[in-house]
Amino acid sequence: MREALSEGRKARGICGDNPPVGCVLVSGGTIVSRGHTGRPGEDHAEAMALAGLSEDQKDVSAYVTLEPCSFQGRTPSCARSLARSGIKSVFVGIIDPDPRNNGAGISILKAAGVLVTIGLLAEEVERDLGPYLALNT
Image (cartoon, rainbow, N blue to C red; front, side):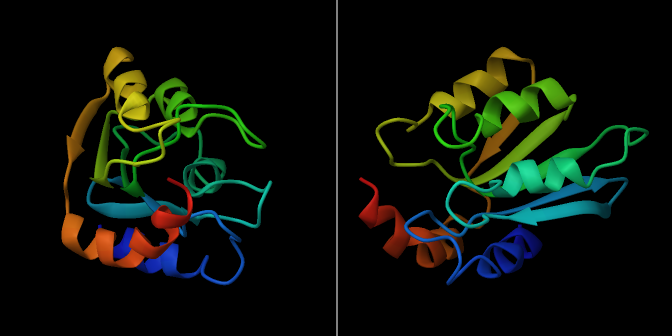
């Protein structure tokens, strides 16, 4: 999750009002892809990381600082994209307090059979994302 936090910090200054989310994909203890929130209307962290994943990767876990979005806005639902990708487990720093999400992304992942763990480095994630999340609730 520390790597996901570091990745998310790359989005500061470019992501507009969106939170600077980071995502790393791990297989066999090695980071195989990473992503962060792009400019408004561009890929979210999860989509960027999934785009960098080779098709032959097996048993991949995602570490994402903020709950993947459940809804389609300017970009597709990250929770649905992760569920379709075959990712086995998702570790989430904090739940997204945005009322459009707020647990709905977790529900999508669990319904798809993805193992979800919530609260990994939650205090650090909250410190990083708190100011951005206050703008969107």
